[in-house]
Image (cartoon, rainbow, N blue to C red; front, side):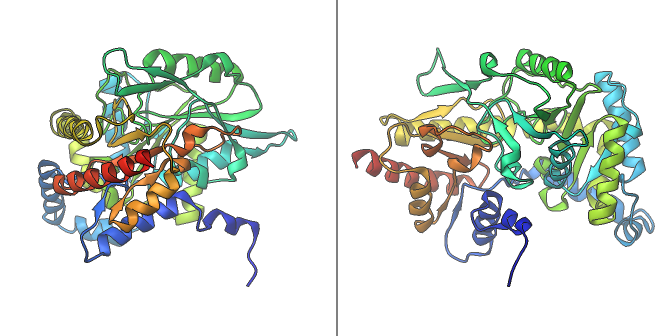
Length: 418
């Protein structure tokens, strides 16, 4: 059977495909597995109780539940939810947001597929433009949403933490960053998936200035960040402007199964996102917005992010770093300073095996991680660093995290003894 060039998007080497297959395999496996690779958020009991309460309220509200699951919505998303979200963003941050600046979509991944196609490839003036990622590593899913050749990313500066030799941090290298009309858009995630890096307010402002000067949009992936779910351990300010496309998600609140993404942008972009929803899925799902609508209206959502979600992950990342020190502290490993998100980014400089081989060895022992080589879309020059890093999730049950990290330590020790 013959397939088009488009079929290459879904090849077995696809990083997102590997990630999701591993997640499904771990969930379905009857043997003991340690899922330290997926992007699933933690099961936080207090958040789960809130969502159960909201579902019960929906069930008790006459025939509202039947309407939510039994009717298509509009291609922009449920208007009541959008209006409440716009009001919250206006009130809390002073952003000039109305219902015309927000669209709901079926998960962030689908929104990026639309946005990257919107701003890359062939343009009416005959040019071919790329998506510029000003810092790498970056999210595994970007590379698989469009032709990988339509990305260009820049190597970061690597800065040692002055207070802790175990930590380092990536920073945008502005000296080698030329933003011009070779690019259709500039994109960053904040905090960054996979590293937990939080681009500073100063870096964010400079990137936005360069995007505006070049006349291209600035896409900010806020799936783990601000204003919600707010999983940041470093100081950061929520940001939006008419030139900004801010992508949010309900997943990391604890709702990945409802597949709800949110795009906040100028009206012209929102109209195209609406059209994309209509063409590819008729309309976005309605369960996610129905479960959080009351929380948005009352502002309880932001309080839960601040008082429940953030402390949970702050405590868990501290425990996981302590575990790394305990099991691997005598080895020449490094950790990107965890400033946000739900992952640790481990660097094994000078290790005798590549991260792809480490991934295979760990999988045989029931430990699922993500090999770091998948997180460098658009990096055109070779870099040994891409072979030396892995992404570890610390959201699983603590017994799984502990057992998994001990096995990782054993394999890394063997590799360094090599």
